[in-house]
Amino acid sequence: MSGSSYKESPTYTSPSYTSASSYEERETLREERSKRIESARESVVEKSNRPRPEANHQQKYDSSLVQKEITRPATGIERIYIIFIDNSGSNEAIANHFRKASEYLQVNLNLIDPQAQFAFVYFSDHCDGEKYWQAVNFISPDDQGEKILISTLKHIPGADGGDAAEAHECALFDACQIDFGDATKRHLIMVSDVVGHGMGLNSDSGCRRDWKESVRLVDKTYTSFEFIGCGDNPNVGELQKQFIDLCHPELLS
Image 1 (cartoon, rainbow, N blue to C red):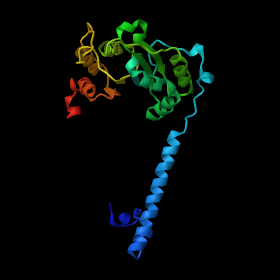
Image 2 (cartoon, rainbow, N blue to C red; image 1 turned 90 degrees about the horizontal axis):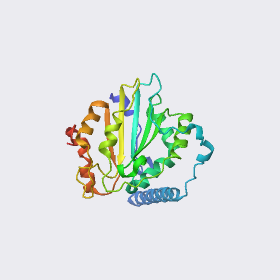
Image 3 (tube, rainbow, N blue to C red; image 1 turned 180 degrees about the vertical axis):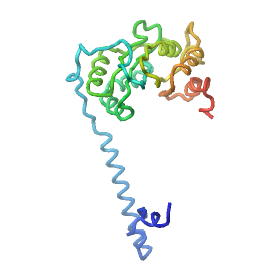
């Protein structure tokens, strides 16, 4: 940065404070500033506690737009994102949040990548039968995509999950069997408060599929894989690191 441009940079120190001529005047200005900060904090708390307006999803619901089967991205789409959301009982609050925040998702997905398409999978465990894998087909982050998302989510109920572990290993394996169409840049995001079978949880009924094989297949199939742990148990958080540590330990160092 040149000397001239540095001099023209804005000054963040309050001129009124720096020009104060006495200790008493500086103390007065400091107290006034503290009061302004406290008032701003109180305002933030007050606004945060206000009830949020409920989105009227009914106006955007259309039964003809329900798409609970993942087919393939639209022709010509090069980038896709597949978001897996743990739909079991222990993660009910997070799963419901995603359902209620569909407009928010649409707006932010459009900011992230307006030329991409997004698919959602609400997964749990095999004991839930057909509820183990409940999907929303590929959508674009536009008004039509939002209507498909809202309409389809109406038909995706919460699941039980059975034991503490969920079928992450099978969900990840099935994610690699999707028809990606023309998409060469594929991003997989998984949100869960637990881990899959065989990964160290005490309550674990087991699964015939090895979670390590599934994670390695994801690493070969997808451009990126991101795991978002949403639980509050630090011990489970340590177990969740295995999803990344298996193929990319350098990311955890």
